[in-house]
Each structure stands twice: as C-alpha cells, then as structure tokens.
Image 1 (cartoon, rainbow, N blue to C red):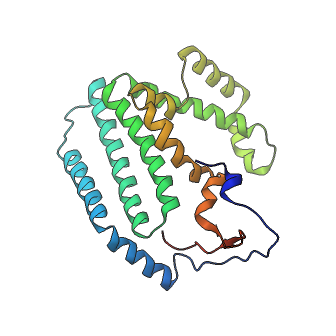
Image 2: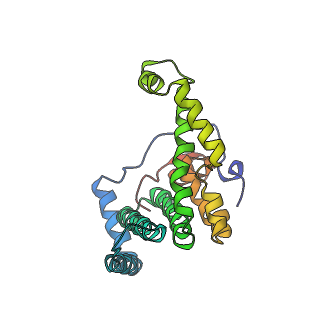
Image 3: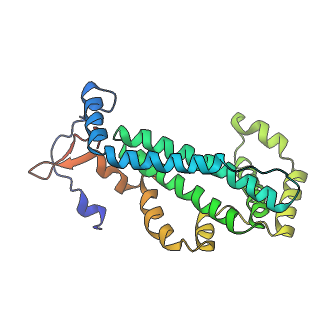
Length: 231
C-alpha cells in the first residue's frame, strides 16, 4: 500500500470537475451493467440474508425473566440490525456505490462484533447497555464547551449535579465506553479488526485514501475528475 503522496501527483494544469454521477441515465445504465456482471454474487448475498432472516424468524423467547432470556432478545434485535445493514449494502452495491458499500461493511462489522459478544457472554449485555452512560457523559461534556443556542437546552438539562452523579456512577461501576476494538478482541476477531475494519474505515472518515475513487491521472500526470460513475 503506497503512501498517498505516491498515489496522486499534482502538476501545473487546470482541474475541472467532471463525471456525470449516479443519477444520470449513463450512471444508471452503468449500474445495471454492474448488477448483471455481479448477479451471482448478489444472489449469494440474497440467499445469506434469507437464511439469517429464516433463522431469526424461527426463534421464540417465551419469557423475559432471566439474563439468558434478555441475552436471546438482544441477540435477535441485533440480528434485525445485521439484516438491515446487509440489505442496504446490497442495494448500494447494485448501484455501484463502492465507497458507500465500504462504509456499510464497517457498520456491519461493528454490529457483528457486538452480536458475537452478546451471544457468547450473558454478562456482556449489561455492560453493553451501560456503555451508553459513558457516551451520554461524553455528549454532556462536549455540550459544556459551547455557549450557543444550539446547546442551550442540553446545558440547562445537564446540571452540575446531574453531571457529577453520572460521572460518579461511571467511576463506581467501572463502566467502559463502547469499543469495537475491545469487542473484536473479546471474540477472537482482532485480525478482522486490524485488516478489513481498518481498511473500510477510510471512507467513513473521508481520509485521503478515500478520494482515490473520484480521481485519476492523465498521461502527463495531471489529476482529473472523471470517476463519478458506478464502479
């Protein structure tokens, strides 16, 4: 994987925004081509989605009294989340939106790591939901950095007493923030995190490498825009 400074070079030449996009007739035609070329792969994904849906639909949790019951319920809720992500990814891929497919793949892995933890450790369910308290404190702390009208309501709600009580609860209960890295490690998926997850993160954050899909160089090494088409 070369550095980005090697991936693109900039020379003295006019750069013009080009590319007709996904909503144009040409873009839609290209998407149909991609769909036809990858039909077997898309059908395989459809079958996988159908299998997961059938499995989840066959499950029944008769009571909600024990930790194990609640574990099963949350696992089913997460299965619904996984199905939605997979269905969205299929629609996105069939339209050739490869950057957005990468985004959804990373979201899928986030959910996969969480679900794997839920299914393998009953006690994780409580820790998972308590992680929202850490996220809540983070939002409150961020809001306190601003005095504008946008944050007025939350700053009025999040009094010093509420903030301190929340901070105290988090410290006393040793609540950990949501961490895909930790969740992946818990279930033996560190290699997946450090490979596929990290690579898919580029387009989520619009890192420099995510821009490669939109540009290329002409014969003289000038950067040109001509890749706003399904790929």
